[in-house]
Image 1 (tube, one colour):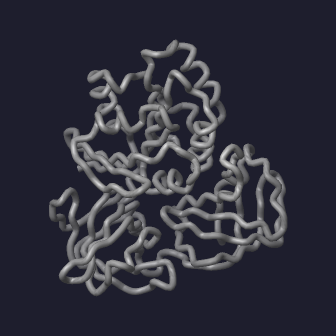
Image 2 (tube, rainbow, N blue to C red):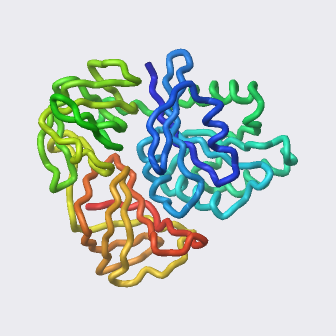
Image 3 (cartoon, helix red, strand yellow):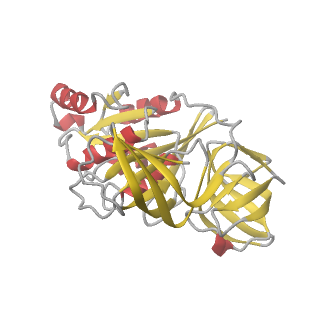
Amino acid sequence: MKNLTIAVIGPYGSGKTSIVEQLKQKEGLESEDIVVRSFKQRDTLVNLVDVPGGLDTPEIAIAALSFSNAFMLVIGADNPITYQLGEFIGILDNMKFNKGIICLNKIDSADKETAIKKLSSLLKGTSLENVEIFPMSALDPQNIADLREKLISIEVEDKSNYPAVFTVDSGFEWSKGAVALGTLLRGKIEVHKKLIICPEPLTKELEVLSIQVNQEDQKELIGNSRAGIGLKDIYPWYLNRGVELREEGKYKDVKEGKIKIELSKLYKNKIEEESEITLINHWQNVNVKLSNIKIENNILNADFSADKNIAFDENDVILAINKDLPIRMFRILGRAYIY
């Protein structure tokens, strides 16, 4: 079965959650900041990760996108161009996302051609330039049926041969240890496979004893899939958001080093010596201080030291942000590479 995890993002008032509620067949994870709903269409299981529309916590949108293999950007046609939309587009562009769909919702309350023209102009030159814009209404059953078909037709890269990475949302107690709830981003996990919990100081080898997808037992899990994984000899309080399960020897786990950031052209704040920024990799949020900064051709190179370790491999998309800036300032520095 094909598995799709789709991050659903969009400004407040766009009708994003209304669309998700119309699409869903099954409830899923609910937390303070994300809600997961799912539907099954023929041979495809789609998990919809509904992200809050506000931008007081851009790291939530970045994290949800990082463990999704496609996106659905919802925009209200009655108010298509907003500051919030600009930052969402900036996040997608810096992550180089181009797999997904843009839903121009509430099309019955606006001039369709004018709304599409304005939006197309805004997207020009970004990674979203060639992504389909789908004019629709969340109240139209045919639009919802068409949207389901469009979502399951999204083609994504097969990452089953990559090193396994399972990012944890939460955990709960189990008779043999604990169950980790989360998403297998890529790779493959089988029952009895050995994985390392990370980042440091949580470095311990764990054995997978069970796998459940939609409350059904499985013998293996192939990315990109949401699941519960039963782990031997671990307490549930170690399975907090930000913890990951990876294959031994196939990732790095550091607290300091050198960093390169491809700076966003929209980021206007001055970057000075000893500047403090945040690196986001999946649910990992790491505060770092930059030193020996050199900027040339919109590329920043620097040394960094962090408040805690960050685990990553070459396939991860790490974004650098400045959370201290006011909401109405663009806070995405750009894509970061640690070496």
